[in-house]
Image (tube, rainbow, N blue to C red):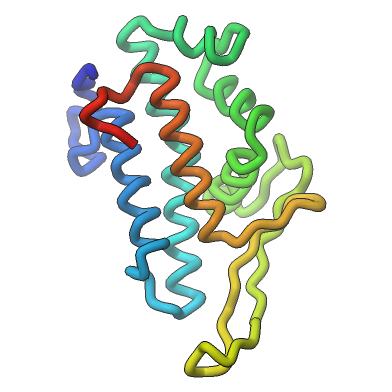
Length: 181
């Protein structure tokens, strides 16, 4: 796919395309799921929030790449309507996928402290202590995301976000067969 050169100041540490950012999300999700994150709830929270921020910012990178390569028609075919900005792309994503809607609220709250737009149902993040004889300490902290009646373990949310973005990239023709999923 196109190697998009942007940000000549180098402020993105070499991440230059939407596929580069997708690879960052894949790496972060493997870290969260592959045991790279220590069991400490605080460190797991940092890693999960980082994934959510990356997953939400993906919309800006995807939209910019499609615009710069004159392929917004692929997005409009996928959405079934005109998507005239990255913000409208974000609105459409939240309408289509509850996990991206959760992601939006987590990422936005991490930057702005509160969420005032597209905040229905309101997302809550919870740390719950659970007991287990399988754990050396006898308990562990489960990180949970709630939105209305929906609840998901935070690590599972991150894996779903990665899978959703892989599907969107595939559907928009942004991944070559070699880039896989």
